[in-house]
Image 1 (cartoon, rainbow, N blue to C red):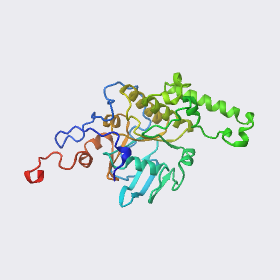
Image 2 (image 1 turned 135 degrees about the vertical axis):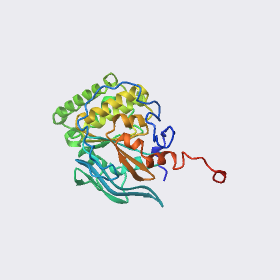
Image 3 (image 1 turned 180 degrees about the vertical axis):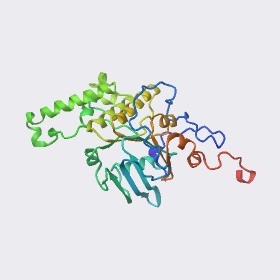
Image 4 (image 1 turned 45 degrees about the vertical axis):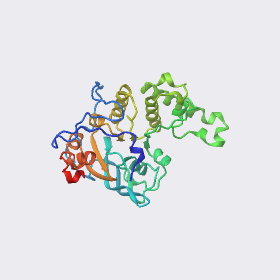
Length: 323
């Protein structure tokens, strides 16, 4: 099954001898992250994976999200067939895999934007099967998109304010009485301005969202997701199409989410980014989870190398095979 959402960027993996595995530092989607110096942001869960079994579906010390036997079919083709995956609370987990692996489709199933044909998902030990995406956001689970979603004819500040929860002015009768919603509105605006300042976007607050560059839209989308004060943030290719300077800014913001105790799951093709910010990596291929582990372990995992480059990438074809 071809996952079109995964096809925007392709991972460029340097091929050496078979023992070298994936060469971290190869990038896709425009520019890597390895050359620029990053601000030192503390990692509060450093070392938590030291004793975790690096096999698909292994138990984690404190699990926030668990998915079991999740299957999604389109006609006769199976796009996702995940036996089990468990996500550690407070960690940055990367979901990687070649184009068409089913990563974005799996994201959609986890976040309520699509429904699985089979399977079970739990958030904080409670089933979220069949729960709509907006209700999941209210429970603290939000996501961003590979292709940014912004209301281009509204200002950046107004786009931010749309992300806030518990706004009494959204109800018809309450909206008729200004004193009933004005206080909350002022708090929402203050929160939005504080987040724009955090993401260095204050100067764009009153500009139309349609005038933003692709990288600026990524920043605003991540900032808007934080308006819900989530505990689990899911980012679908946050670095795709972003110039190197803004990539550095985004990397710092993702690390800051972890420093605040939030959990981050992100889809990414840039292997340098994966090494830089990930605590744990989950690898998909052909809709299945084929490997889990630390970034360094995954880079040397033969099953992962084969998934990206083919199982015979390091051997010469015979004349008969070429024919």
